[in-house]
Image (tube, rainbow over all chains, first blue to last red; front, top):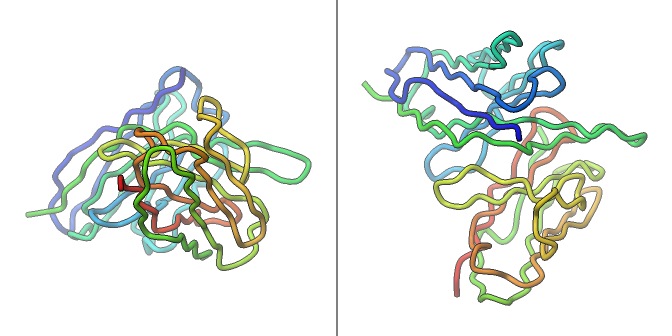
Length: 124
Length: 107
């Protein structure tokens, strides 16, 4: 049974870089896309971006190039870096598997396995 | 970006009630629509993908329908564990986007 577990610092200072890692267990990281999503206090869910080991990552343009997503097949991990953080980046950060169902009608993506979430606070 | 709008934002219902949540996309997304349940302090849980396909392990009281721009999540008989927030999400075009959520509360 595949599981994903996020880890990283819970407190980041303004203007610094938020760095999180997600470890995948129970399956290979290779066949899937892997997403980062966040939920700020009192807000809804926001997709940050995703990555596949053999493709370039796709980031949400709303983050204005502050985001880098990377993947390491040798450790079965993928990572998120968010630069120049402000208090608005305070949120619960989730990592998730972005499963794909390929049909003759198209490819369907859905996030079917989620980590527990890492609460990150941006504060001096 | 594709905007997703859910209605209502919240609702009160009783155990056993039939509950319907609506999600509208700002453009035609075919059936590239997923539904998630979020309980307090827990990660979101996939309920339905491709608008109407029930995720493995999800109770059959949950169902989804719709295509194009209008979608519906129905809970046929609300159970105590169903009091939660529900989100729709489109996977037609990146960036993936979510609705603002519908909170289902106990009446």
